[in-house]
Image (cartoon, rainbow, N blue to C red):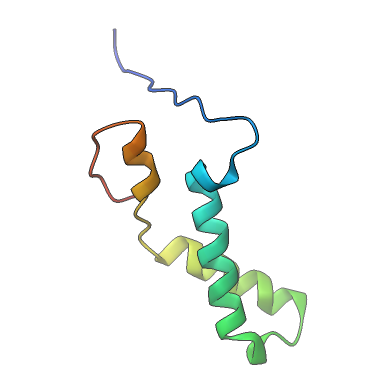
Length: 72
């Protein structure tokens, strides 16, 4: 076997347990913080991509499913 794939089954309607929701929340809060710069959708898109590409995310909720301490 060359690699491993680890699959996490999340509850169907439990966004509070889904780590991706944390990314959305942090990105939205970043945009709210700099709302005065958002004069066009192009700028909003740039700020969103800047934040998601440059920010290091920690997923504390993922520890419910595994013992990983890795920051992505």
